[in-house]
Image 1 (spheres, helix red, strand yellow):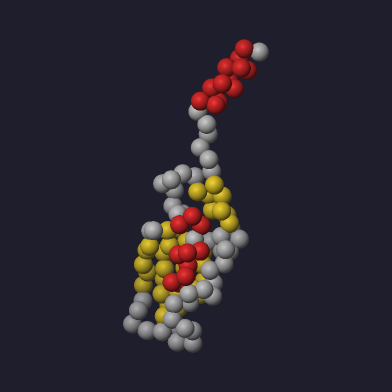
Image 2: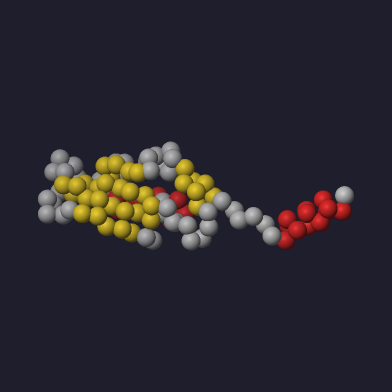
Length: 102
């Protein structure tokens, strides 16, 4: 009985780190400029790849990875998972990838 009491007392002294799990919404169809306000806790890094799409308005999110509905674990204050977005551009000279770690 004494061992159980000591174990419970020591568990209170050193709590386990909290793991937060968030479910990603769909960003497809949103303007990239509006994605920042929709990020879970602002703790997700965003990597953007621009693709020339003259048939789409510039700045529209065309695809995302991880997909909507997938869950991200935010293990600690330094944990920063990456959301990959493909965004349309009407300027065929704009190509490439940018990273935004807000």
